[in-house]
Length: 355
Image 1: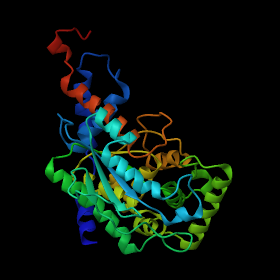
Image 2 (image 1 turned 45 degrees about the vertical axis):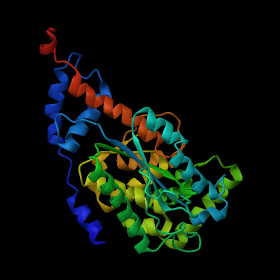
Image 3 (image 1 turned 90 degrees about the vertical axis):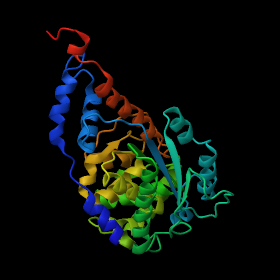
Image 4 (image 1 turned 120 degrees about the vertical axis):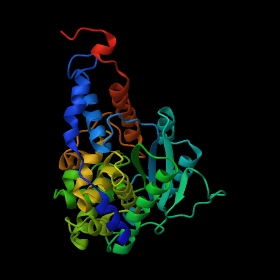
């Protein structure tokens, strides 16, 4: 807990007073004022977050956090629980959607075992793209009691912080994305969202991996039962995480906290990673201004979270894969906005009349 407190204390308010000076520079570039729209808004936020008027985005990292959920035994997902473990191997081999998109924009993928239900058979445990931070072999079924202990919830947050700090020490990270893997984690995220955003379960729940109508109705019943039984305190992020969360969700919240404590902007992905942002926000509301919403997913609850955090998605591509895919695509847009500020000529430099 002491480690967590130290990180929370380090988080500063974003200095938005720098935005006007950046806007003046943007207005001097060879284009009509404001003609690059949200690209201009994005780079202004990057400067305000980093305090650097000439930001560069060289080292981009997406952390894919994996963990299993005991509530999977309630038949809430279209896929069996062993898919989590199988997908971790796929990530490590470079064959998943996130690997393809990350290679496309030259982003490093780091896979983290936060609580996969099986034992990973990895010959080389010192793989550069793998971190073992397993808290437990999946959470407990939260229809029968809390998903994890409060101590485990804190450990998952600290594990996420440590993962970020370990990588940041090796190569200063300029931009972070977070992604997830965990069968039944939309059920957990729906419970977190309903609790913190104070919404009815039916307002935040979606079909996740593509479940049928009957399974969707069962999912609603399961979440309602869990919330009645566990009564998470919506103002206490650790309490919500421990009662209806997941280890990978706590890990992603830890990544957010660790990154913003170093003034590194974070791109959140879809519904699951945005649920982790809710947990981080309840621990320290200042983190909101460091976040970029990579995209708007097809999950109903995702829109609820973005409205709650007052975040506008960069992309809307009808994605619902997770893994950090939408966040990584948005990283490309963020990097482009920074290059506009740094590389575009001014009217004076180009010898072009402004009148």
